[in-house]
View 1 (cartoon, rainbow, N blue to C red):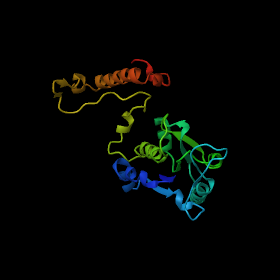
View 2: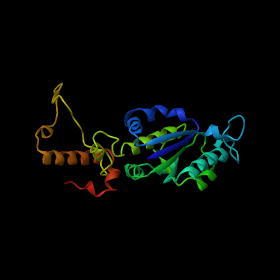
View 3: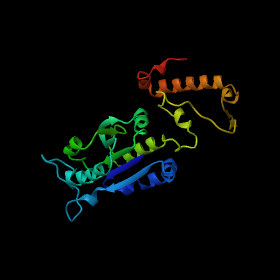
Length: 232
């Protein structure tokens, strides 16, 4: 897989891409991630990429010229499955979308700043718009890092335990069940006996019951989206 990130301040996410699962996936050649600084594509000697919005109002808007110059150069080099713009008013990013994007060969992630990008960029270049939550960040670089982490960890070979991702929250429409490790008793708090029983069927049922209970309590909206909302 190849991921190109187009953004105003690449160093914001550099460390996120060099450590952990994403860093190891890059070292193993499972994913190539290239960062492109929009200031390098500015059409003025000052490197400015933004200007005041038409119609007035506060804030600045990223101009068409640097974004078109960068993304059109990338599109001329290879085919991309999606050109994704990270924006607060985009489609909510979910585990299902991460699963689908992990099957792509090449992605472009466009991260804005200021008041966003000129609408003509969205109309002409962007194929999908994603939001990581109902809040506003200073820029889209961190949102791009979130999407990259969620997608790359699903690539075959990225995780040492391939089955681990299958047990994550949201993979089956539910929040994950509680997890425990040694010691069996810590300050009087015991690990549930069923997890120490060796009865794999009983453990599976317990985990499903706990996942349902946790989802009903914390995210009941998820149960309306999946058939697994019924008790076993």
